[in-house]
Length: 312
Image (cartoon, rainbow, N blue to C red; front, side, top):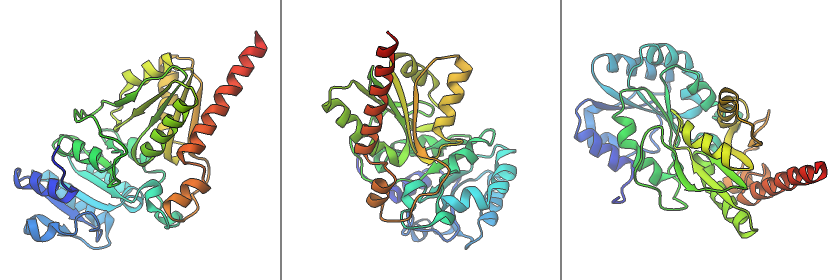
């Protein structure tokens, strides 16, 4: 695809469909140049996330498709009741764009860390979730996500891509980077890059490593997940989110529902917020780098195989 920015693509989509409007709660980092481009179709409510959601619901009831921007922590937590009641119950096609989610909030402390956002949003009936791996993935998925009739929560991500993505984006379909019989890594969003690095380290050490980019967590690609569960010795979930309610919980639910036996290793934040710092320092300190993930996986595989050998 021809390279463009998020702003450029958003402007293009808006100009070709008069139903779209853009709103923000004084969070213009990703749309700084858009107000003067689209003028009356841009609204800033100030630091008032509940008002932002209520206004968006009202506009949607009148045939508009609001694209709403705010910090992910405030969008999903401070305004949660409004998202649930005003958007979720009525199943309105409002698109919620959450900025600086997960580790992307870097130096911000716990009040600004959105690491329970997936858990909150997926619990709302009808709410879908799009977590692009990087800027390219975001731009590939955005047209179909914005034109969907369903409400969507989007984890905004403008990181540069670690690889060229499959341009055939479909809501509810995962991107299969590779298949592996020793281990398959399931991941989404910002942690895709480190998961990709972990895959390369594993392969250099002689392991057959699969990697799946779960572009949408809801709806999720259950078919590919079941295939991975049945074909790999170890399944690893990697996410910059609390262990509870995120991808690990989603996979555990699938395993239980489908009655599949599987070895499941989570890489997630367990019962604590992350230490604020520059992003590379966070990854190192919290042991979320590709190297740390690979070592964790190798240790788990060796432990399991030693256990099986001991039984034999």
